[in-house]
Image 1: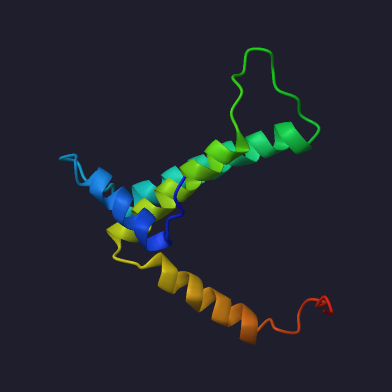
Image 2: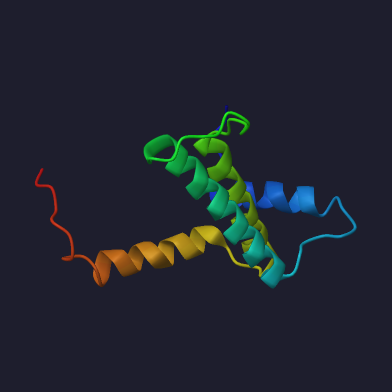
Length: 109
């Protein structure tokens, strides 16, 4: 499987969404979708790592799939708002490398 950049992922999702007349949902609707998908991810993590086993009637879903659902909707939201997620990531990394640079105990090389 080929590696894709975040830009590649954003372009792929944009191409997919633009294939439908409905296009992107509103930002508020996508925020609700992200919340829903994060809840499904939390449920799977709770089943796998927590004390709540699945019911025998519940289908097996992978954490990997649930993370993918969250990522897809997040990319949709970013695309609809014309936000470059690679740039967003760099802004956050700069923040962590400056503001929070001494917040955690670093591992010595």
